[in-house]
Image (cartoon, rainbow, N blue to C red; front, side, top):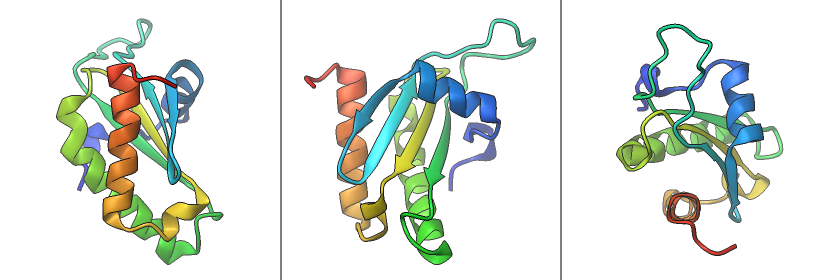
Length: 123
């Protein structure tokens, strides 16, 4: 499970990652990454915490399927937090096919998206 201190909860954080970050699309996921995001106007904010949030719409499936996809994505992100730059904001948006994808397919898509975003891969 993804620790609570690493979860995006505020709408402003989601908006920052989506609007100001880079994006990588894959068949089952779209990953938005805002590297080293800090809010200079927020007192006490540290750049060391990497946070992740998830968007899984009803297009993915019913409640059971959406929750299964979110659980899988939280677990996958938890394993990859150390690979991300400190202070990063990550938003993972599941596309409609993600409900039918297995764990390995989601892992491959997430790894490929991170490789493109962090490694500067070709578009």
